[in-house]
Image 1 (cartoon, rainbow, N blue to C red):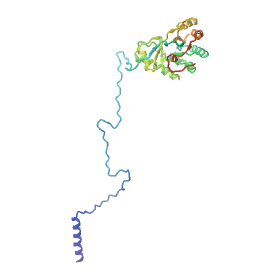
Image 2 (image 1 turned 45 degrees about the horizontal axis):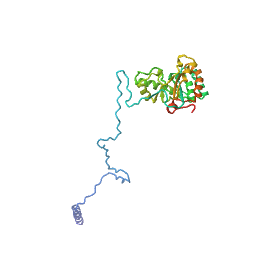
Image 3 (image 1 turned 180 degrees about the vertical axis):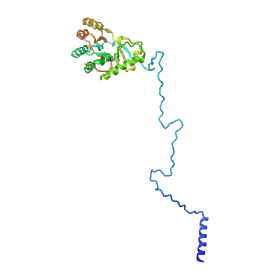
Image 4 (image 1 turned 135 degrees about the vertical axis):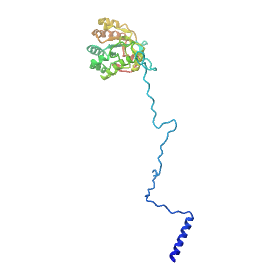
Length: 289
């Protein structure tokens, strides 16, 4: 009887509890997880993939490649539209008593060495315009020129006329000369001289594209390459005035013989021998500052 009364009492208690809204806790075989520490991501967090704002991108934008320049009917590439042509100079303006000796081509390595020896002995500044082919054939000769402090400038590789050639062909000729000279451990100055004085606007643009801001000509031509005597060469050279650029070559021995008379004449008149860089205000090597 006691058990019956106790059972009825338990049923009455359970019914009252359930009527109040309380429910029994659920049980499962899932193990409890540790409470996330500071900064930790809750185990029930949902990963969200960020979306880009309209008009933006999560990766840097890559500009489309520039279209290749269109070749003309002659098969040539045009120069860049914003390229400014190199300046053509044949002498310096002003009344300063300076004169620039220049030596072209670079053929006859033995004669080049004699010219260098004379210039060093008498402390005469000068500028050399050898073809890159001449440098390629006698690299040690030109390394000694550079070691003595004389500037070397671009006179092309093949010594062919540049005028009337395409811009890109003229540029290729100048760049080839630069690369061949650089292969010998030498650096060309920031100006060039066109073979035979043949040039056009494409030459000026090609020079500028090659990093050579001046097309250097001359106003005194000794014609020493024609085989005239040293006395005749000197006679043609000594008639120059202030700021003159005098053209000579390394080919003939007569040019070397004429140097002593040329240098003595100008020094007697109070002239100073300068490099092309000094004449034009372009930084570069100067053997005798």
